[in-house]
Image (cartoon, rainbow, N blue to C red; front, side):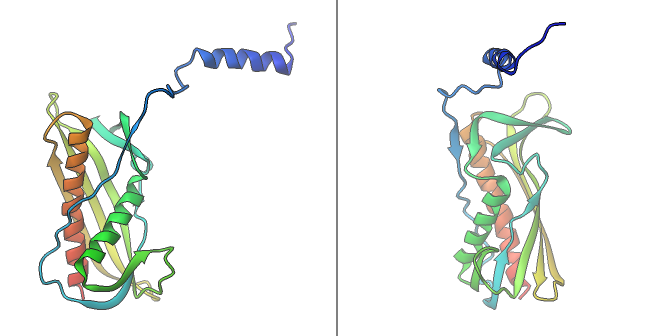
Length: 202
């Protein structure tokens, strides 16, 4: 019977890892992308007198990540190798939702759930899609964003308004920057509809 000491096992494991591809190439930088969507809600939105907390959207694990998701085959999620989001997709969407509400100048106060506000309403959302989609036959990619939001009264937690917003924008190029630009446009459309419909609820 052959026996190994703990040190021998550690050396074997280290040698195995040295030849394994799970160790990243630290000399290859990964570009970090953020989004600055131009959300343009409907003009002449009614001014509201309530305070709003925007909760972080829920999402499936495949898009609840800093990695930029793509799909080329139904029901299969992959990720771009050369770039990441600056934060997880749900946190990015939360931050941009808050900015979009602030940009209307039609609401007394809006912030994240950690801002210490005493809200009249909470906006709870479900981020259903946030990935680049490639059509069959190797055609270019489109950025697909879909957000389902519910306006919940406080403190009784009654849903007073639901908004489904979705956009798909074709990338004007095959590189990752062009795809990120398409994400920015798609998210801008989703934010514009969400903000307009929520504030129109009065």
